[in-house]
Length: 284
Ligand code: NAP
Image 1 (cartoon, rainbow, N blue to C red):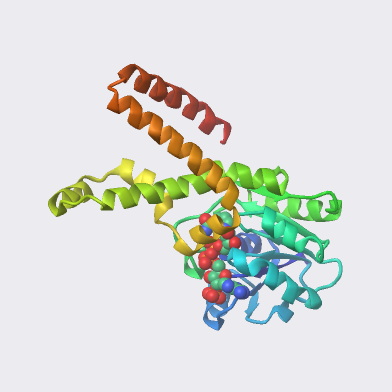
Image 2: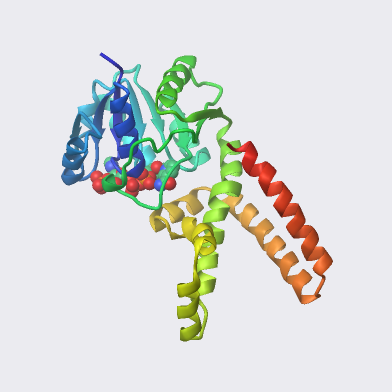
């Protein structure tokens, strides 16, 4: 029989992971907060069995903690007494440094992870197959991480079709501030700005005219608000750094337009046109 994988938190990420792992021959035991979610998980074939009790995971060899960020460390603390000493524990939290620093001292078999895939939806009903195919999956080992834990997770992440990367928790948090957390907040700022239009008729027209450009740039600002707040709380410094740089760049654009410095504006837009292509090409 294949490896038994435990998943705690059967929502968008945990549920999608369960669907793919089961289809790859893993035995999946799910644990979630609500009974109804556990029933849905079994019906939707997210898990072979599911329960609201962490003790259900006693036979799991690898456990993915897929709860909201604030529940990750307390969940692992409550889970440890039920596990075999060899069991490997990982998480999928969008921020790594505070989680790894909180857990490593008392859970040496923990290896932080972050699948860089998602949608704007949440909960078990949002779980979907192949969510992780060809998307980055970051593992953040530290000096004491065992090669066994890395090898085991490497195999599972390969099975769901994700592209594996390794870096330190600190590098992870700084990098994702640029490409994930800043876009989320910039996009939220964009939506708020647009909704601030004072003339009702103009606002309605804007809504009717909104096409793919607005849909693309506002997409990540229209996601799970609870997750956005958790991310900002747990990656505060890096987010402030990236937002400040963003504000400087916005000021640069405002100044160029105020001063009718079209050459300056053209130079900025030529630079972003050519660099975006290279930046995005490197991420595929
Ligand atoms: P989600 O859809 O809201 O799923 C989380 C699920 O965890 C909830 O549906 C809830 O299920 C369950 N849960 C909540 N508290 C729990 C607890 N104390 N014990 C057990 N289960 C609990 O959220 P998500 O988007 O999957 O995010 C989960 C994690 O993935 C977060 O740490 C997030 O940082 C990370 N992540 C998210 C994305 C994304 O784009 N969404 C991408 C990468 C990583 P019930 O209450 O229904 O039982």
